[in-house]
Amino acid sequence: MMLFSFRFFVEFVKENQTGVEEGMAFNMGQLLSAPFIALGVISIVK
Image 1 (spheres, rainbow, N blue to C red):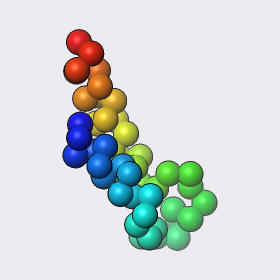
Image 2 (cartoon, rainbow, N blue to C red; image 1 turned 135 degrees about the horizontal axis):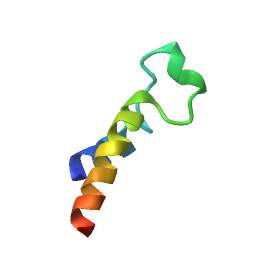
Image 3 (tube, rainbow, N blue to C red; image 1 turned 90 degrees about the horizontal axis):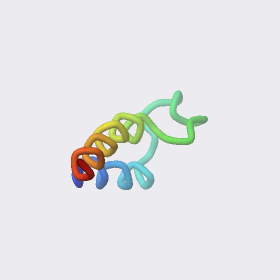
């Protein structure tokens, strides 16, 4: 969970890799990290 949380915040300072990410609120790395962060939080709570 910590790895994906770190990646989520690092993606804010990185340049977008493709033109598709220009209009998105979150880039692809953040969207792919979010489910793993949620799974980690759920695992900790349970």
